[in-house]
Every structure is written in structure tokens, then in C-alpha cells.
Length: 300
Ligand SMILES: Nc1nc2c(ncn2[C@@H]2O[C@H](COP(=O)(O)OP(=O)(O)OP(=O)(O)O)[C@@H](O)[C@H]2O)c(=O)[nH]1
Ligand SMILES: [Mg+2]
Image (tube, rainbow, N blue to C red; front, side):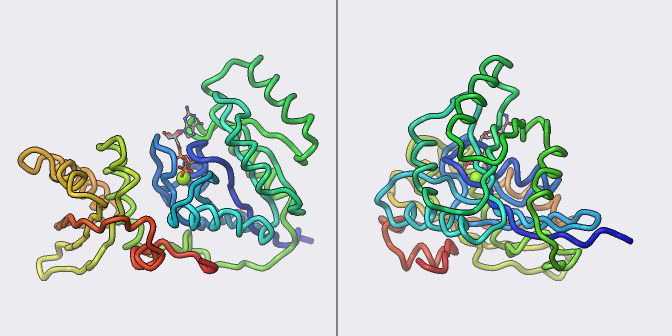
């Protein structure tokens, strides 16, 4: 007799920048979420469906949990917190190099009273020596909050097979929730907008990365087989718009070139990427605009 099919949900949660989206991508063996070295990169819940022999793991990548009064940030945190009780397993992530800090404490406080089983994933172990890792594991073990603690390096793909089998142990018998060819519920044009935003996160600094939203307005195939994407980059201030355009248009060109190369690879077709820049003052404080930009959350 064959083993029964297993399926269920595991949510990756933690403070910003610990490597949640990197883990999702590495487990999926493809880019589903954008990543960057800036905190608050992910702005909404992203689903990745991992199809395994005899099992299906539905992974949720969530925005980093943090404190902020802005409507956008509130929505981001809510998107993460709302997964807590809806999943079979919470993968709570820490970063080994920074250890357990006040921001991680805030994350643990936000899950007080949550009954869902929790496994602690200590990421970025490639950045620390063994003794530092062992003392962090010991410190976290004493909190008696976690079923297990697993050290990994998402970036170096160290410990990922062990993590996959660990997740499977917590999943119930269940159906194939998603068809085999489905890897994410994220629409393609949203991901393309995110790829453009990722290049902006990489190429700009100070307050610019956080103030930017990218909306793909249109995507269609021209008669010659070239795909055209029209996308608008929104900033909050004229000064930010100026930075995004750059001297003689150099920054915008660079953003466009890097995004185009990546999107072309995914499409397997030539791309004409048309970028516009607009200013929408204080959009991060306006719930309606946040929704218009595609950062939606059900209870928001
Ligand atoms: N050295 C090292 N760096 C890592 C590892 N995992 C992720 N990173 C880096 O950490 C940074 C943040 O990674 P993300 O995956 O964007 O982090 P996140 O937790 O999704 O961040 P938010 O979306 O802002 O909450 C990036 O520069 C990654 O390359 C790891 O295992 N080792
Ligand atoms: Mg992320």
C-alpha cells in the first residue's frame, strides 16, 4: 500500500530582511518573490506551491513584521499576522548573524497565544561560526516556544532538504489543493512589476526604495512577436522622481535595462519595456491608493 497524500500550508514569518523570500525562492527552485538587502522588500503575501512525490507543500512568504504607523506598513504586517492561525506550521525565521534582537522579540510577541505549531528557522548560518550558532540555538531553546530548531543557509542552499522533510512531518493527509503546473497564485504582470521594483531597490538608496510602487498598466504582444509592457513607477516626491530619472535619464535607463533582461528571460521573447514615472504624494498613507497599486489584503 502506498502512503496517503499529504498536503498543507507553511507560512514563513519573521522580521524584515532575515531571508524569508530567499528561502521561498530556493525551496521552489525558481524566483517567485523578489529579494533585496533592504528591509521591507516584500509587501504582500506570496504563495509558492511545492510539488513533491506524494505531497504538496503550500508555502507562504510574508512581509517582515515590524512597527510603523503608515497604512502600507500596517497592511504588510496584517498580511503576515493573518496567516498565523490559518496554516499547519509557522516557520519563524531569525538571522544567525544578528542573533535574537528586539525586532525578533516583537515578532514573537505578535504571535502570543497563537496555537499553530512553530518551528524556528535560523537562517544565514554561512555568516557565523559554530560556537555562535550553538549559543543562539541554546538561547532560543530555552524559550520553549518551538517544536524544533533548524539552522539553514537559504542563500547557500544548506539544510533545505532537511527543512523540506521537517515541514512534511507537520502536514496532515490532504488533497492536491493546486494543479501540478501551478507554482504561485501571483499574476505574471504583478511579478513583472515586482522585478522592476527590485531593480529600483538595488540601484537607489535612502528613502527612495521604500517610497516606490510599480504598476504594470498594460502587457501585450506586438505583431512582430515583441512583447510590450507599459509600467508606471510611482514615487512620493519630485525629488525622488528626479533621482529615479537620473542624470540625462541614466538611472531610468539602467532600471529599465536590468528589468528588461530578466523579464525577457522569463518570457523567452523580446521585450519593449516602457517606463513612466509619476508622483503620488503620501501614497503609503492612503488605503485606497495602496489597493489600486495591487497591495491588497482581505481584511484591510
Ligand atoms: N549570507 C546570507 N545572506 C542571505 C541568506 N538568505 C538571505 N540572505 C540575504 O539577506 C537579504 C534579505 O533577503 P530577503 O529574502 O529579501 O529577506 P526577507 O526576509 O524576505 O525581507 P523582507 O521582505 O524585507 O521582510 C538579501 O540580501 C539576501 O541575499 C543566507 O542564507 N545567507
Ligand atoms: Mg521578503
